Length: 207
Image (cartoon, rainbow, N blue to C red; front, side, top):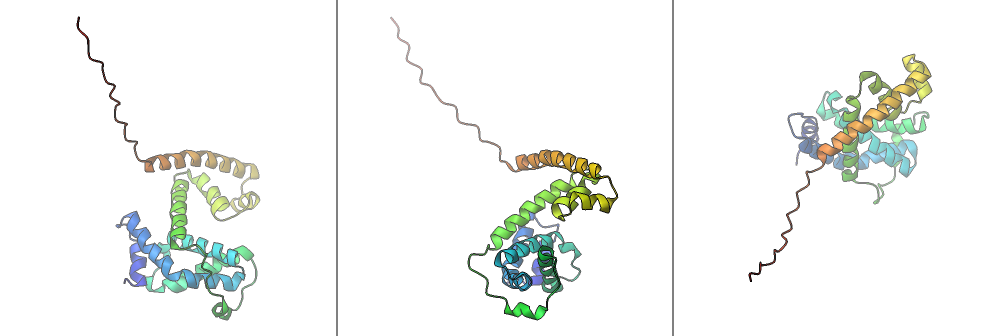
């Protein structure tokens, strides 16, 4: 069985196929889901919110793997992401990390690695589409849809009129529809032409 550090290296290795990278990351999800759930539950004390935080954390982890300098430090790095995602949901004060050990067992009906990996793949496609937008539209789209900022907050952050932010989001939505449609078409297999139907020709009668 591969070690965690090797899985991390494979999951971010651009020389491997997308399927191979997803397979490696899926194994990491499988190994760390239970403990990640406990980390999130220790903060949120709510099963459904903990589940959401863990799913989002794995998506962020996959997108940020290149920022992890030492693959051996994956567990601690992931914990920081999980706890950060949990605090984003409650925006409350931090709690004593010693309560993590007291978190309940993982319920059997929680989504497994396959469901999380599917969400990772979908968000990766969305990120690819966002990166195809013009730079000004990219920024407001990421802040609004991916980081959860309001339009007013984005306007203050970028020092732009609110109307400009709204227009850029409007243009981005329109452009994203076209980009995503093109991506979907590229994944759609070409239809196999139907075999011609042979109509029997009646035998000619001669006088």
